[in-house]
Length: 249
Image (cartoon, rainbow, N blue to C red; front, side, top):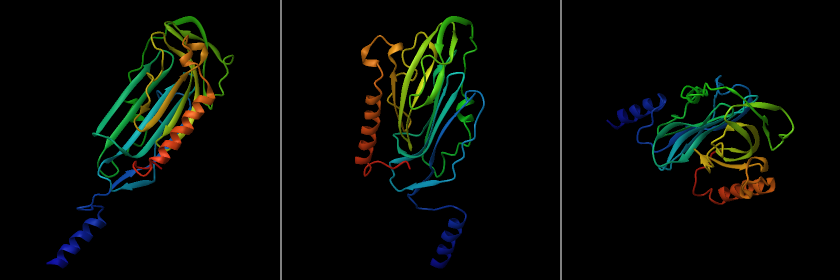
């Protein structure tokens, strides 16, 4: 009888089933892409590596962040394991345009390789972009680039009506990602922050720091050394806590 039980377990293992196993297997990897038209045209998101975790408090996760300033687009992606209180799948629209488009997709799940999205369609299929595009008289620089390299005097463009000039540095730390970007564009006049001044999106830690030209508050003035210090400090903190949180790479 025991021989039959062993043969049954071996058969399930060959078929990819692991009864009585507490190990969670998740797709694992990150993506950073700069290009054009990412808010309308999907790009492939294939991950060939996995990570396993025996801690029953973690889940598989996948996170996407889209920023499109018109002339250039950015997609950030992260897959791996992370602690989360509940299973969830949601798309959040920060800015639907006209001007800058910004949105995120966050998915936490608790079965093997459930973070299996293969393209950014999981985000784009749920976007409702503004069709309003009446031209205005405000002229602003338009730029999206790595490591604060945008120039206030470059790519000056007339913005849509009811938008204003926006400029920030966006620091990214977590989910196997560590970088920052310079973002200039046209933003809805009623907004101050593009990403609502959030400290994280899914498993990705973020810091949105406004440039001097877009805010009258000195607390929002960009000091790039401060931004870099924040990123290095957060990296050190994550290293110190690495024994208690699940690594994402």
